[in-house]
Length: 379
Image 1 (cartoon, rainbow, N blue to C red):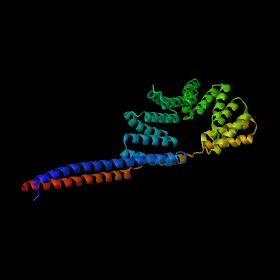
Image 2: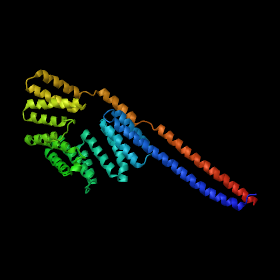
Image 3: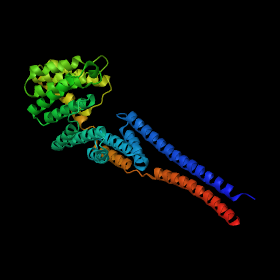
Image 4: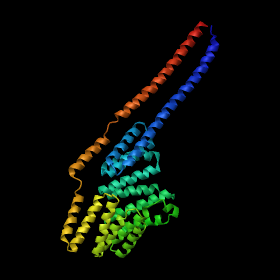
């Protein structure tokens, strides 16, 4: 007969070891599952990045799939990250109101976690959407929130972000014809960027763009001689193989402004050549350039080319048919409202699997306890 006390001691040791192994196994199982979902989310977001400006709807679909997965399984950081991606994709697709909704979803979590980087990015994104919707006061409020978050921070990224915000505020005031304010903020942006060390300047590409913005502000403020200095400075900073259509457009505007139509025409045609050479599609930019060329040919008495480029300008501005826009919006809304059934089924399967393992463990422990009780009675 089995000695009762020997069995009791053996059962105690077995139960302790079994419990430790069980909890270790379950912890490892669920931790591995979490890591797999994180890898899947990161993979989907990487694929979304790949399709940006190539297939924006595909990019949005991948970002939303990652977002669905994060909402079901992800940690707060992954939820914020996927909300940011979906919001960026919607902004690219000109769905500005919807983009704001997803940016705010991200902010609702990031404010609680006090994640500075995501807070900054999401406020900037909201501001960009307000810009396109023409809500300039709301845009400024978002920029002020970013500046408040970065107050007294002097690390490189914080200074770079402040410079970017000042530049965007300058562009906003430029769009609303408030040239004194636009000049004030672009000078603040330049002051930050020009103080970067040589090593830091190698990490940024904004300085040339800032010179261009300052040139545009000065040109619209009737300070043409000062403006052209900054346009040329911007052009000199662009390396071989990079597109120069932006400073060419600015130099064309300068020559147009001073009545030098032949040089203006030369630069505008260079703009179109650069955009074609580098496969750059920007219907608004091209439309404005076509319109300027049409006006120059009109002033030069060439009615044939004037009409030709005027028609090209109109075609660019009317390129997106209303019915196509409506169809695209329907597709986007379908992507955003896509059901999460697959992830819910997968989650249910994992819960059931884990639950079965726990149940089996308790059954084994119960049977051992019964054996222990019966032996106790026999003894």
